[in-house]
Amino acid sequence: MTFIHSAKLISLAYSLGLFVFGYFLAKKVSHFVAIPIAQRFSRHHAQLVRRATFYIIFIMFFVTGLQHLGFNLSVLLGAAGVFTVAVSFASQTAASNLISGIFLLFERPFKVGDTIEVKTIRGTVESIDLLSSKLRTADNTLVRIPNESMMKSEIFNLSYFLTRRIDVLLGVSYQCNIEQVKRLLKEVAEACDNVLKEPEPTVIIEHFADYAVQLKLMVWAKNGDLQTIKNSLQEKIKQVFDEQGIEMPVQQVTIHQVEVEKE
Image (cartoon, rainbow, N blue to C red; front, side):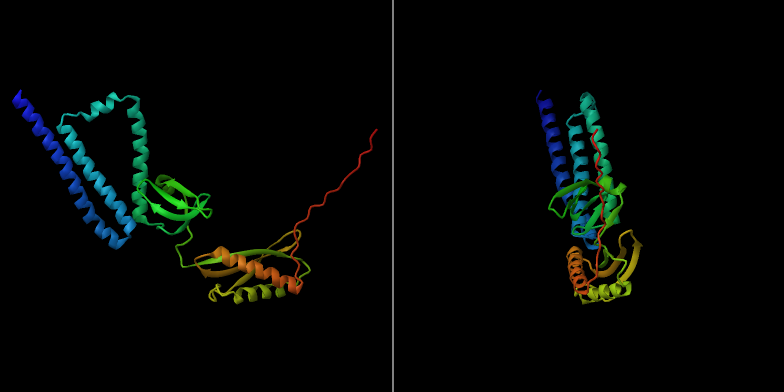
Protein backbone atom coordinates (compact mmCIF):
# COMPACT_ATOMS: atom_id res chain seq x y z
CA MET A 1 0.00 0.00 0.00
CA THR A 2 2.85 2.33 0.91
CA PHE A 3 4.51 1.61 -2.43
CA ILE A 4 1.28 2.34 -4.32
CA HIS A 5 0.73 5.51 -2.34
CA SER A 6 4.29 6.65 -3.02
CA ALA A 7 3.89 5.90 -6.73
CA LYS A 8 0.75 8.06 -6.85
CA LEU A 9 2.55 10.89 -5.11
CA ILE A 10 5.45 10.62 -7.55
CA SER A 11 3.02 10.58 -10.47
CA LEU A 12 1.19 13.61 -9.09
CA ALA A 13 4.47 15.44 -8.50
CA TYR A 14 5.61 14.58 -12.04
CA SER A 15 2.36 15.91 -13.52
CA LEU A 16 2.54 19.08 -11.46
CA GLY A 17 6.12 19.45 -12.62
CA LEU A 18 4.93 19.17 -16.22
CA PHE A 19 2.31 21.85 -15.61
CA VAL A 20 4.81 24.25 -14.04
CA PHE A 21 7.58 23.51 -16.55
CA GLY A 22 5.14 23.83 -19.46
CA TYR A 23 3.89 27.16 -18.13
CA PHE A 24 7.34 28.72 -17.82
CA LEU A 25 8.57 27.17 -21.07
CA ALA A 26 5.51 28.49 -22.91
CA LYS A 27 6.13 31.94 -21.43
CA LYS A 28 9.78 31.93 -22.45
CA VAL A 29 9.28 30.56 -25.98
CA SER A 30 6.31 32.83 -26.71
CA HIS A 31 8.37 35.83 -25.61
CA PHE A 32 11.27 35.00 -27.96
CA VAL A 33 8.91 34.22 -30.85
CA ALA A 34 7.18 37.58 -30.42
CA ILE A 35 10.38 39.65 -30.64
CA PRO A 36 10.93 39.37 -34.44
CA ILE A 37 7.19 39.74 -35.02
CA ALA A 38 7.21 43.05 -33.13
CA GLN A 39 10.18 44.25 -35.20
CA ARG A 40 8.63 43.28 -38.53
CA PHE A 41 4.96 44.00 -37.86
CA SER A 42 3.58 45.70 -34.73
CA ARG A 43 3.26 45.22 -30.99
CA HIS A 44 -0.32 44.11 -31.37
CA HIS A 45 0.62 41.41 -33.87
CA ALA A 46 3.43 40.31 -31.55
CA GLN A 47 0.98 40.05 -28.67
CA LEU A 48 -1.33 37.81 -30.71
CA VAL A 49 1.52 35.51 -31.72
CA ARG A 50 2.76 35.41 -28.14
CA ARG A 51 -0.67 34.38 -26.85
CA ALA A 52 -1.13 31.71 -29.51
CA THR A 53 2.34 30.24 -28.92
CA PHE A 54 1.85 30.26 -25.15
CA TYR A 55 -1.49 28.44 -25.25
CA ILE A 56 -0.36 25.84 -27.78
CA ILE A 57 2.75 24.88 -25.77
CA PHE A 58 1.03 25.00 -22.38
CA ILE A 59 -1.96 22.92 -23.54
CA MET A 60 0.42 20.24 -24.86
CA PHE A 61 2.12 19.94 -21.45
CA PHE A 62 -1.22 20.16 -19.63
CA VAL A 63 -2.73 17.30 -21.66
CA THR A 64 0.43 15.21 -21.18
CA GLY A 65 0.24 15.79 -17.43
CA LEU A 66 -3.41 14.72 -17.28
CA GLN A 67 -2.68 11.58 -19.25
CA HIS A 68 0.20 10.75 -16.89
CA LEU A 69 -2.24 10.99 -13.97
CA GLY A 70 -4.37 8.37 -15.66
CA PHE A 71 -6.99 10.57 -17.26
CA ASN A 72 -8.18 9.10 -20.52
CA LEU A 73 -9.27 12.22 -22.33
CA SER A 74 -10.96 10.37 -25.18
CA VAL A 75 -13.09 8.37 -22.73
CA LEU A 76 -14.00 11.49 -20.78
CA LEU A 77 -15.02 13.33 -23.90
CA GLY A 78 -16.86 10.31 -25.28
CA ALA A 79 -18.86 9.98 -22.08
CA ALA A 80 -19.94 13.57 -22.38
CA GLY A 81 -22.34 12.65 -25.20
CA VAL A 82 -24.16 15.68 -26.50
CA PHE A 83 -21.65 17.94 -24.80
CA THR A 84 -18.93 16.44 -26.99
CA VAL A 85 -20.89 17.27 -30.14
CA ALA A 86 -21.44 20.82 -28.94
CA VAL A 87 -17.77 21.20 -28.07
CA SER A 88 -16.85 19.74 -31.46
CA PHE A 89 -18.92 22.32 -33.33
CA ALA A 90 -17.64 25.11 -31.09
CA SER A 91 -14.08 23.91 -31.60
CA GLN A 92 -14.52 23.90 -35.37
CA THR A 93 -15.81 27.47 -35.28
CA ALA A 94 -13.05 28.56 -32.92
CA ALA A 95 -10.40 26.82 -35.02
CA SER A 96 -11.73 28.46 -38.18
CA ASN A 97 -11.67 31.88 -36.52
CA LEU A 98 -8.20 31.20 -35.13
CA ILE A 99 -6.78 30.22 -38.52
CA SER A 100 -8.47 33.23 -40.12
CA GLY A 101 -6.98 35.43 -37.41
CA ILE A 102 -3.50 34.13 -38.20
CA PHE A 103 -4.02 34.86 -41.91
CA LEU A 104 -5.21 38.38 -41.09
CA LEU A 105 -2.21 38.77 -38.82
CA PHE A 106 0.33 38.09 -41.57
CA GLU A 107 -1.58 39.47 -44.55
CA ARG A 108 -2.16 42.76 -42.68
CA PRO A 109 -5.07 44.20 -44.70
CA PHE A 110 -5.59 46.63 -41.80
CA LYS A 111 -4.14 47.54 -38.41
CA VAL A 112 -5.36 48.94 -35.12
CA GLY A 113 -6.50 52.54 -35.63
CA ASP A 114 -7.49 52.09 -39.29
CA THR A 115 -10.99 52.93 -40.44
CA ILE A 116 -12.42 50.00 -42.38
CA GLU A 117 -15.73 48.94 -43.88
CA VAL A 118 -16.89 45.32 -43.78
CA LYS A 119 -20.20 44.62 -45.49
CA THR A 120 -22.40 47.43 -44.14
CA ILE A 121 -20.31 48.09 -41.01
CA ARG A 122 -17.86 50.97 -40.92
CA GLY A 123 -15.69 51.75 -37.92
CA THR A 124 -12.24 52.20 -36.43
CA VAL A 125 -10.30 49.03 -35.60
CA GLU A 126 -9.96 48.79 -31.83
CA SER A 127 -8.31 45.36 -31.63
CA ILE A 128 -7.37 42.34 -33.74
CA ASP A 129 -7.63 39.26 -31.55
CA LEU A 130 -7.13 35.59 -32.32
CA LEU A 131 -10.84 34.85 -32.72
CA SER A 132 -12.37 38.19 -33.66
CA SER A 133 -11.72 41.80 -34.57
CA LYS A 134 -13.45 44.69 -32.82
CA LEU A 135 -14.57 47.94 -34.46
CA ARG A 136 -15.80 51.18 -32.93
CA THR A 137 -18.45 52.84 -35.11
CA ALA A 138 -19.02 56.57 -35.52
CA ASP A 139 -21.84 56.48 -32.95
CA ASN A 140 -19.44 54.90 -30.40
CA THR A 141 -20.78 51.35 -30.66
CA LEU A 142 -18.43 48.38 -30.30
CA VAL A 143 -18.90 45.73 -32.99
CA ARG A 144 -17.29 42.29 -32.71
CA ILE A 145 -16.73 40.55 -36.06
CA PRO A 146 -15.50 36.92 -36.14
CA ASN A 147 -12.25 36.61 -38.07
CA GLU A 148 -13.78 33.95 -40.32
CA SER A 149 -16.37 36.50 -41.47
CA MET A 150 -13.59 39.01 -42.08
CA MET A 151 -11.75 36.55 -44.32
CA LYS A 152 -14.89 35.78 -46.34
CA SER A 153 -15.89 39.42 -46.83
CA GLU A 154 -14.56 42.31 -48.84
CA ILE A 155 -12.67 44.68 -46.56
CA PHE A 156 -12.41 48.34 -47.51
CA ASN A 157 -9.49 49.99 -45.72
CA LEU A 158 -10.29 53.70 -45.75
CA SER A 159 -7.04 54.58 -43.97
CA TYR A 160 -4.58 52.63 -46.13
CA PHE A 161 -3.51 55.55 -48.33
CA LEU A 162 -2.42 58.97 -47.10
CA THR A 163 -4.90 60.81 -49.33
CA ARG A 164 -8.50 60.20 -50.34
CA ARG A 165 -10.93 61.74 -52.78
CA ILE A 166 -14.03 63.59 -51.62
CA ASP A 167 -17.02 63.69 -53.97
CA VAL A 168 -19.66 66.40 -53.65
CA LEU A 169 -22.80 65.78 -55.69
CA LEU A 170 -25.18 68.62 -56.54
CA GLY A 171 -27.75 69.64 -59.09
CA VAL A 172 -28.22 73.00 -60.83
CA SER A 173 -30.97 74.35 -63.02
CA TYR A 174 -30.85 73.81 -66.79
CA GLN A 175 -31.01 77.60 -67.15
CA CYS A 176 -27.64 78.03 -65.38
CA ASN A 177 -24.38 78.65 -67.20
CA ILE A 178 -22.55 75.36 -66.61
CA GLU A 179 -19.11 76.86 -67.24
CA GLN A 180 -19.77 79.54 -64.62
CA VAL A 181 -20.97 76.90 -62.14
CA LYS A 182 -17.87 74.76 -62.72
CA ARG A 183 -15.62 77.79 -62.23
CA LEU A 184 -17.34 78.72 -58.96
CA LEU A 185 -17.05 75.17 -57.66
CA LYS A 186 -13.33 75.08 -58.42
CA GLU A 187 -12.83 78.44 -56.70
CA VAL A 188 -14.60 77.17 -53.59
CA ALA A 189 -12.45 74.04 -53.55
CA GLU A 190 -9.19 75.92 -54.11
CA ALA A 191 -10.04 78.34 -51.28
CA CYS A 192 -10.44 75.47 -48.81
CA ASP A 193 -7.23 75.04 -46.78
CA ASN A 194 -7.71 71.30 -46.30
CA VAL A 195 -8.07 70.56 -50.02
CA LEU A 196 -4.85 69.51 -51.78
CA LYS A 197 -3.58 71.48 -54.76
CA GLU A 198 -2.45 68.28 -56.47
CA PRO A 199 -4.36 66.48 -57.83
CA GLU A 200 -6.31 69.63 -58.60
CA PRO A 201 -10.09 69.84 -58.02
CA THR A 202 -12.20 68.57 -60.91
CA VAL A 203 -15.84 69.15 -61.84
CA ILE A 204 -17.73 66.86 -64.22
CA ILE A 205 -21.32 66.49 -65.36
CA GLU A 206 -22.51 63.30 -63.68
CA HIS A 207 -25.78 62.99 -65.61
CA PHE A 208 -28.84 64.87 -66.82
CA ALA A 209 -31.78 64.42 -64.48
CA ASP A 210 -35.39 65.39 -65.23
CA TYR A 211 -35.23 68.45 -63.00
CA ALA A 212 -31.51 69.41 -62.91
CA VAL A 213 -28.03 68.97 -64.33
CA GLN A 214 -26.21 66.73 -61.85
CA LEU A 215 -22.59 67.74 -61.26
CA LYS A 216 -19.80 66.12 -59.26
CA LEU A 217 -17.03 68.09 -57.58
CA MET A 218 -14.01 65.88 -56.88
CA VAL A 219 -11.26 67.05 -54.53
CA TRP A 220 -8.38 65.34 -52.75
CA ALA A 221 -7.47 65.72 -49.09
CA LYS A 222 -5.24 64.10 -46.50
CA ASN A 223 -6.83 61.11 -44.84
CA GLY A 224 -8.54 62.23 -41.66
CA ASP A 225 -11.82 63.92 -40.84
CA LEU A 226 -13.07 63.92 -44.43
CA GLN A 227 -16.69 64.36 -43.43
CA THR A 228 -15.90 67.73 -41.83
CA ILE A 229 -14.10 68.86 -45.00
CA LYS A 230 -17.03 67.75 -47.16
CA ASN A 231 -19.52 69.55 -44.94
CA SER A 232 -17.42 72.73 -45.06
CA LEU A 233 -17.34 72.58 -48.87
CA GLN A 234 -21.10 72.07 -49.10
CA GLU A 235 -21.81 75.02 -46.80
CA LYS A 236 -19.52 77.29 -48.82
CA ILE A 237 -21.03 76.13 -52.13
CA LYS A 238 -24.54 76.93 -50.88
CA GLN A 239 -23.39 80.38 -49.76
CA VAL A 240 -21.68 81.18 -53.09
CA PHE A 241 -24.60 79.88 -55.15
CA ASP A 242 -27.03 82.03 -53.16
CA GLU A 243 -24.84 85.09 -53.76
CA GLN A 244 -24.53 84.37 -57.50
CA GLY A 245 -28.17 83.42 -57.98
CA ILE A 246 -27.38 79.82 -58.97
CA GLU A 247 -30.54 77.78 -58.57
CA MET A 248 -30.36 74.25 -57.17
CA PRO A 249 -33.77 72.75 -57.94
CA VAL A 250 -35.21 69.77 -56.11
CA GLN A 251 -37.40 67.08 -57.55
CA GLN A 252 -41.04 67.97 -57.17
CA VAL A 253 -44.05 65.72 -57.11
CA THR A 254 -47.33 67.10 -58.41
CA ILE A 255 -50.50 65.68 -56.90
CA HIS A 256 -53.77 66.11 -58.79
CA GLN A 257 -56.90 66.02 -56.72
CA VAL A 258 -59.97 64.74 -58.52
CA GLU A 259 -63.43 65.26 -57.11
CA VAL A 260 -65.80 62.38 -57.58
CA GLU A 261 -69.51 63.20 -57.66
CA LYS A 262 -71.57 61.25 -55.21
CA GLU A 263 -74.64 59.55 -56.58
